[in-house]
Structure formats: C-alpha cells, structure tokens
Image 1: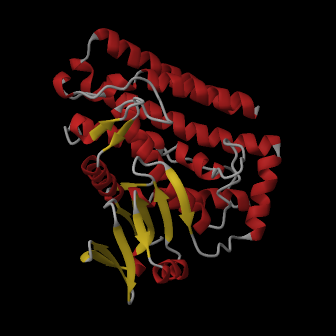
Image 2: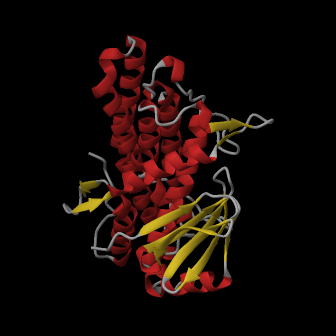
Length: 347
C-alpha cells in the first residue's frame, strides 16, 4: 500500500517558499510562516501570487514533488514537475486501446458506471436522510432522477458506441444538476442557491466551490496517473486535446460526486460556508474570498484523511489515496492483469 503523503496549499498572497536543508519554508513579509519536511509531500499548490525560489524548484524536482499554480479564483495556470519516466510498454498499450473502438468503449462504460452510480448515491443519501422534511414535489423529483440513474446504469453494458456513451453521460449530468439545488438543506435565510452548472466563470457561490474542488481533484488524479506510469493526456471518455489532461479528467468523473459534490453540500448544510465567503465581480462572476477558500481547503484536507474500505480491494484506506488506488487498477487492466477496470463505487 502506498504511503499517504500530503499536498500543501499556499493561499497567502505574496508568500515566498524556499528550501532550508530538507525542509520547505514559507516566508510572509520576511517572517517564517511555517515549514514542512520535503519527504512528507507529494505536491504544492500555489493559489494566487506565490513565489518559489530556484533552489526549491530543483529540490521539488528531485523528490518528485509536483508544483501547481492556480489563479486566486482557482483556475489552473501551470504545473512544474521533474522528469517523468513512465512505462513505455504500458503507455503504448494505453494509446492502442484508446484508438480501438471496442476496448475504448469498455473503459468508458466502467468510468460512467462509477460516475452515475455515485451520482445516484448522492441523491439517495439525501432522500434517505431528509425526505420527511421535503415537499412531496421535491422528493418526487429526486426519486424520479434516482430511477433514471438506475435505468442508465442498466443501459451502459449494452451500449458500445463511444459517442452514445458520452450522450448517456450528458443525460445523467443534466438530470443530476437539475436537482442539485434541492440537496442543499441549510436554513432559507442562510441558504446558498445553485442556478445550474456554470464554469468559466462560475456565476454563483455553489459553482465557485465545485469548480475549485474539481481543479484540486484533477491535480490529485494527474499525479496518481503519472506515478503508476500512465500518460494523463491520453484519455478514453475525454478525447485528447492539446494541453488537456484527458485521462485525469476520466479518473476524476467517478470522484466528482463523492469527493467534491458531497463536500460542498456538507460545508453548506453545516453552515461552514456562507455568502460572506464570496465576492461578486462586475461581470457577475463569483469568486471565493481568502477566508472562504481556506475553510474549503481545510474541509477538503480533513475529508482526504477519512478512512473507508475500498469496495473492490476490500482493504482499509484513506479517501486521499483513492485516486492512486484507481490509477493502479486502471494500469493493471491495461497490462492485461484484470479483465475490466473496476470503478470506485461509493457505499
């Protein structure tokens, strides 16, 4: 089992990170704001105006610590990493299967099974815990969407056209986000509203949080894929495009509902995030404040420490290790050690 190392998120504007022996030190206005041993880290995510010294960049490269840069509103900007050796035979097989219509569709089926199953689990959880306090029209609509997900899951094994499979994903996504606002249980006076999925830019507070967490999850998925020797650019569900980590986006799909969507619902329903944690720009775009972003990052890091039993491996693991475990399972399937890729199914 891979040791769970950490990712640090630097959100302080103007912070300087430097190397001090085997440690990474953060300076703010010349004063030390924190330090961490380099061997404990998998990645550094710099949000906003953060600077790394040249010796630290070399140190991170040697230890395999990936450095990612995000804008202050969470948009991905750049990524620094050392030499990526990969596995040439594994990657050749990845490319071959991506171009084979049947074998590509087989992997897409598994990815979508995980995504739709976990979307259904989110809806079911809300119905189980809160249906007694819902208007009948809301619970009825959630039940209808839950049944639609079940029908789509039954349809997946019989559909072998990649474009039609992508159409199934689109249908599931539209239904899921059409009821997402109904899953928010905070009191009306404090309630944030979800007005449909909006990305670039996010047009409400809920979308701002979703987009931010999705960006963090892509970072974790990409790092996991590279660690097992796969090429994060060559996907199956997401076709390759210049500069797009298509396979990382594939791996992300099964984690969106349980690691991002559920976390956003939790912080809202517990009152950990409110309107004061956001700023509305002149064009209507919504961004998180520094304090709001830190609250969400803290909740995300705490969530990654939670333990569960992996449904396929039957081993206890932490949530933060799930991308690595799924990347390993995908690599095993591509090597021919497993007949199919088993997606992560949230229980």
